[in-house]
Length: 217
Image 1: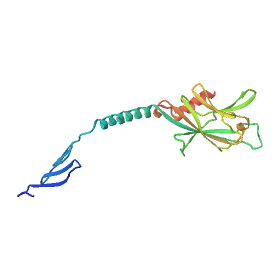
Image 2: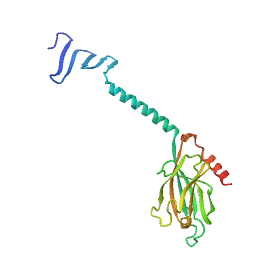
Image 3: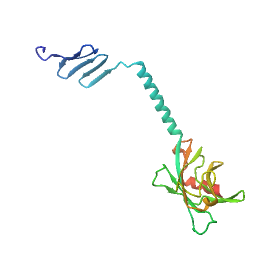
């Protein structure tokens, strides 16, 4: 029942058997205090005090979540990926002896629509077991590894991985070679390079191109 004057005491709810009791006591102009079982909220003018009882299990889970977040942050700063698009097109469909010309695009993601064209020819021919092989430097110096993600067309009748084309590591560089009929045909490869360093630590495009010229010279 309400008291006289400005003080009011009201019972909000009581659930017998459910071990939950909510009580609103003494409501005054701008001061409210609310007690909820083990949780206590206090509002007084412009400040808020929050006291919550948390089980040891929840505390342990929060600790694991924090450790996982810290690990992910460090990992993200120490590893990064870059993509390369190698696009090869024949000069003359009737000429089945010369290797098709290839160009390399630098990409920041697999679906990057703003690939940066490398302004130099990174490809050359070498003999392998008496057969000409066409090598192209994909410009991922220092990468820990490189993978061929996709090729186009996917059902190419002349290009078969490890048989007529393959990624090969030489020193700090990765090269894609093609031989046989795959050497002279139209083909496109999407390649992902993995680096054990932050993206900000990788050389600029200008430095990358200068390094490629030194390797090819």
